[in-house]
Amino acid sequence: MRLKYYFLALILTLIIELLVAYIFGFGNKKSIITIIFTNLITHPSLCYFLWLNSVIFIIPVNFFSIIILEISVVLLE
Image (tube, rainbow, N blue to C red; front, side):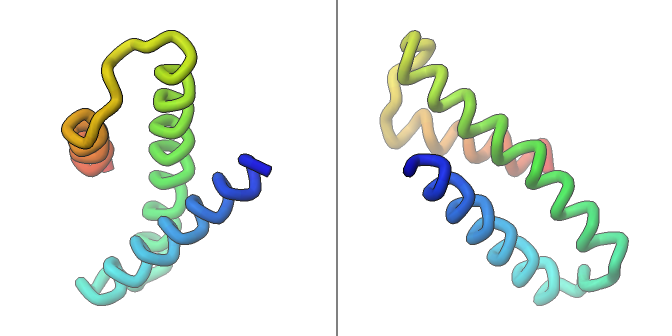
C-alpha cells in the first residue's frame, strides 16, 4: 500500500516539475529527459532518507527539517 502512495507522489512530482519546466521554456527533449532522470535520483533518495530517519532517528522530523531537506534537493537539481 505504501508503495502505491510513493509512486503517486513520484508521478505528481514529475508532472508538476515538467509543467513548470515547460512554462519556463525548457520543453525540449533533452531538458525533459534531464528533469525525469534527476527526479528519479533525488525523489527516492529523499524518501529513503526520511524512511531511514523514521527507523533510526538521525534528525528530528519537523516542518523546518523537511524544508531544509527539500531545499537541498532543489539545490542538487
